[in-house]
Length: 465
Image 1 (cartoon, rainbow, N blue to C red):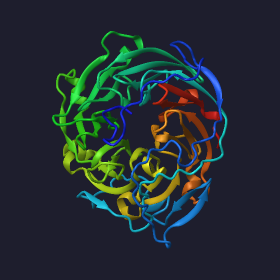
Image 2: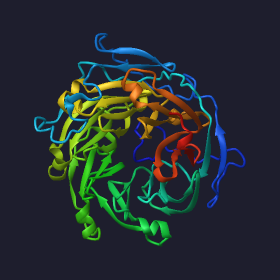
Image 3: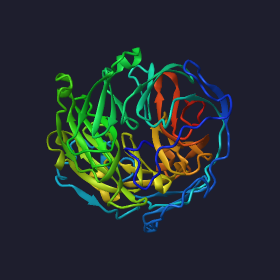
């Protein structure tokens, strides 16, 4: 993990490692295709001896415990997938939430920190390809036309051409001191935004693709920020939000004005108080609200239960300090977010689980918003949707053992919410799989691997449904 986002109790970024002989992929080479079918991480292996907090027990009257592929599934009657009769949309539902409130659940309870790792089955074999990137690949973002993929490495951005299928060619690596975490592209495809320092660097996509000498157009900085982790644009690309883990806030910039000024000024608006070490952000489906995770509820050392906040975007654009409307517990070390129409999914890294919240209940009845807790293997981080309600997550194995294995796990969101076994399959990946994205028109899923310095490419059509 890049130094600006890794929590204080975690080790520094991994050193680049070589795959077994013959596995390297040089620029222009698509890599080797191999079936992955190693056994997943067994309980207790590849995990550091982290502190453990007791997992809070939910009342039996509102919690149903069901076996799920060797783990457990927790479901509650906290609103359900269609709670609120708003189709999951939260547009216009915050008029009564004018102050920031942290809600404690009265129904199902978010899990605490745990070192217990359930064995995930079934293990499946799919064709994959590994592609050499560089040291500590972390975040990745494809261009709006799907022709290129950008990957953060230590103090730089690697540029790939997507050749189709599982084949990618490394074109170049652009130096960018301080980069190494989140990426975002504008809707028109003109700009790539990289979290950096106290804000973000803005780069020309065409310059990155063509190899121009100076792709960096400007920097957006906040006066007291540090530890930039994740950038997120408003739906109209007029405002930019940057999660700052070091200063425990989300910086807000008027990106539209910054573009018009040629980035001669940062157009910083203010900070959203987003808890301790905010890291993940995603816009709600209706685009009017922003979900943000915070790794911790309170300052301190060691892993800790964290939170999920709901932010009113129009208010954040004008008065960021008053824009957080709801905050709920979200497991231990909540990381990444995938919001669907009705459900908000959050990976809880140090609970070894993925949590499902009702999008409507987060606002209408936040104490009952938690719908499900699904076991997800060791240290889940990345999450992205497939078709037919399927969700893909990465289990990073936390990097405790560089020779260990993480997983790419496929779950059925519909089955999880219905209280049924939800794990469809697990693809073991040697190293530390971290973040992932899907290239729609190539049917390709790309995963960064922190420990090996590579990308892993998987064919989406070969994943179970």
